[in-house]
Length: 315
Image (cartoon, rainbow, N blue to C red; front, side, top):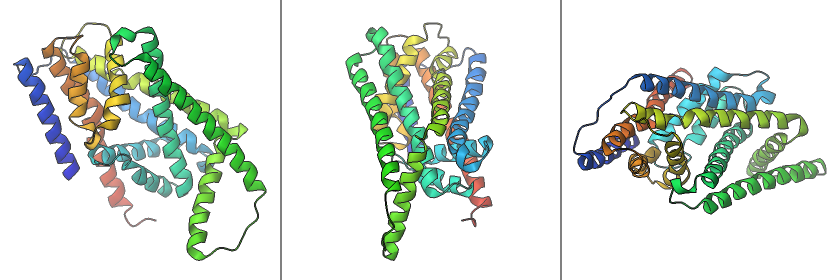
């Protein structure tokens, strides 16, 4: 719970900094955008569960969307309070194992979903800034370089999967010691699971997961404009979308705080200060961080607690 307390403290400090500059308390002028944003948040959780369910479909034999959504929320809770990046991965892999996925396959599902999220964010940010370079201080060439790097990484992974598949067919089993056998067996399972995602029959599932990831980010990036609309913002959505893309691409991955607490509030306020009044930004920041961080963290805490208590004696 130290991470949760630190996260709340950093958020309060960041909001206090913005409020002191504004000189007034935050206030809500319209509630319907808040209701729409809450619905979009719930749908975004379901989409993340659906993405994992699609990726795990060949192993599980059916779409377990609700179970996968619970896994995602439990991971969101751990990621929201953990000061270590990627702390949610072991929890998600453990819960996927309880659903019937081997550890190696579960790891590949979680990592692949994460790579799809990163790919969509970087490529989308690069594409937007090509057409609207004046909306951000970060040069579009930097994001283009990032997009090219993401594309090269996917190509490299596909080539590696192909080579591993060919090598596996020509391998012969050799005697191994106990620990070496365990480690080598796990690595072999990881390689086989990874190679499966790039087989011709399963590329459609990967393409489907990529399309669902695009849909997820379409809903996820609506949080910012809707949050500002609760405070009376009536301007263009494009600067707000670009601000969020820059936030999740450059600011939050580098923030050494649980869930990016503090950095998310100050970063969003700084990026939006040129496009909205300080009072609007202050109220919008509180709603935005509540939707993007605290709401899934609280919901994830309820899910994670129930999962650990109900299945604590499981494998």
